[in-house]
Length: 258
Image (tube, rainbow, N blue to C red; front, side, top):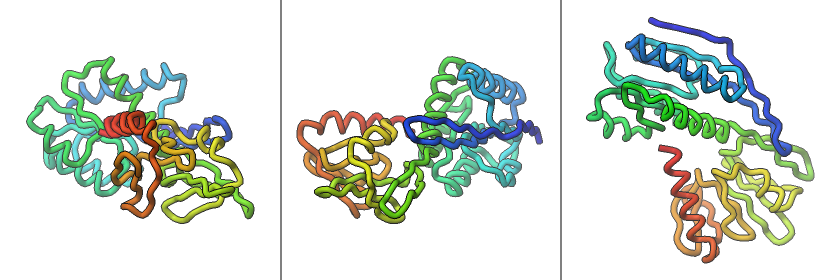
């Protein structure tokens, strides 16, 4: 088993009253030593160019060792053709254990693409690796990870509660109240809609109506007047003049999640 460990690093990024706490762990699983070495180098160069210390980086040469690993797996680069169990099996296991894992499939065999896409891989990288394409995809992966890990304070009259931005379903203005709907419960915020519009990550949230800001992640379906969220537990108004912009932004979000 090939294994390289770099001490984990936590990023604290202060941005408009939001403290982003990021402790990323990147995993490479490939039996080709040259590809492993190339990926290590590309990843280190990416973070050097971003002026950020490289996160924890761990490498495995087979799927069995990867599945035995007990550590977090935030971004994974996974080969398909390996000794023992193949990458399709491993990828399915990883996705079942953590649906938010950001999974890159790396292979020379395009016939595996359809199978890999069934468990929603983030990107498909073909060998030999193209450096510039890798950097573009790595930026998308890191941006997505940051978005999922952003923690936001919800200030109410009784206290301040911290939640992941991904757990926020929608923000709704109800007369003089502003309600933040989350997976766990609703909070009555002391801040107005403009505050939340400025605070929430732009690539995941959209103001569909003056009274609603919705999270793309929780959308079930929508038409020209309504957006249904969280398995139709919530609905938000969608103004006609915003329909096209909303649809385009939502499709772009879905594309970034593939």
